[in-house]
Amino acid sequence: MSLSTSHSPSPSSPPARATAAADPGRRGPGTVRPPRASRLRATVAERLVRHALAGLPLRVSLAGAEQLGLGGPLLDIRDPATFFRRIGDDGLIGFGESYMAGEWDSPDLVGVLTVLADHVATLIPPSLQRLRGLWAPRRPAGQLGTQEGARDNISHHYDLSNELFALFLDDTLSYSAALFRGFPAEHALLPAAQHRKIDRLLDLAGVGPGTALLEIGTGWGELAIRAAARGARVLSVTLSGEQQELARRRIRDAGCEDRVEVRLCDYRDVDGQYDAIVSVEMIEAVGAEFWPVYFRTLDRRLAPGGKIALQAITMPDDRMRAARKTYTWIQKYIFPGGLLPSVEAVEEVTAAHTALRIERRDDFGTHYAETLRLWRERFTERAADVDALGFDATFRRMWTFYLAYSEAGFRSGYLHVQQMLLTRQEPAR
Image (cartoon, helix red, strand yellow):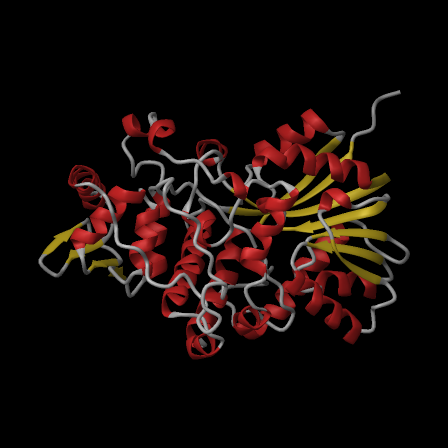
C-alpha cells in the first residue's frame, strides 16, 4: 500500500523516521516538536480554520468552552491555541501532527476525516489555492524516486518490522485492497478476499502454466505463491530486505522455491522479457518524475503479446496536479516520496512514452475502505502487542491516524483503487 494526498507542511520540518535508529529500545517519532508559528501566522490560521469548520457537518468542541460546526461527528480540540499554531506552522500537516500529540481527538476519527475529505477542495479559499506555489513547500530532494532515494523510501515503511504488519494483516500478509463479496466483512474473511483480488489480477494478466511472470513489488510473497501454484515461473523484485527475507521463507514453506525467485532489486535493473507483468500498489511509490521511466521499463520487459495487470490507488487529476510538487503528511511520516497518480496521468504517460494502453479498468474503492477498517480495528485491538514490539505511543497514534485517514479517503470517494489491464498497441502495418 502506498498513499499520498495534498497536505502541506513547512519545508523546515525534516522527515520523521518511525524506526529504531535513534533509540533501539523504543521505535517511533517520539514527542512531536512544539509549533513555532509566529503570532501572525497562528492568527491567520485560526481565522481560516474557524471559518472552514463553522460550515462543515461536524460538531467541533474547542476545549469544551466553544462549539462550531453544523452538527455531525465530534472533533474535540483539547488545546485550541496549540492546534491553531500547528496549522499556522505546517498547514494541514499540522492537523495530523496535532492528533499525534494528543491535542485533538474524536470518538469517530474516520467520520471526522471523511467529512474533511468530502470538502478537501473547498477547505482553503480559492484565492489562497491560486498562491499554492508560494506557500506550499516542496519535497526534500532525498525523497525523489532515484535508485538510492527509492531504497530509502521503501525501507522507511516496509522495513519497520514484519511482526508489526503481521499484527493487523491477515494470514496472507497482503497489504493492499481486498475484494469482498459483500459488506460489512469480518477479519476472518480477509484471506479469501485477498485471494479473490490476487486471482483477478492473475486472470487479467493471463497467468497460467508456463507463464514467465515478473512481479514488481513482492510484498510478503502471496501473489508469487498463487502464481506458482498455477504453474507460472516468477521473478519478484523488492527493495525491502525485511520483505525479501520473509517472502522467501513463505515461498519455501509453500513448496514453490523452484518456481519463484525473490530478488532485492530496483525495477529499473530487471532484464529479460516476460509473458506477464503484475504490480500491486507499487506505482504510488515511484514518484511523478519517474512515471515515464517506470512505464518504459514495463514496455521493454513485456514480451510480444504479453499483458500487464496493475493495481493502483488513484486520485482526481486536478488534485494530483496540485499536489505533485508539494510535501505531505503522508510523505513526511508514512510513505516518503510517494504520489498517487490519476487515471488521466497513466493514460498520458503511457501514450507519450510507450506503446502501452489501458485496455480495461475496474474500480473497487469501497472495498479498500472496508479493508482499511478491518486493519484499523485489528491494529487498535492489538495495541499492547504493538507496544511490546517497542513502538511508542506517538507511533501508535500516527499509525491510527494513517489508517483512518486512508479509510476516509476511500469512503468519501476522493480516492479510488483500480485494477488496470495494459497491453501493447502494435503499430498498424
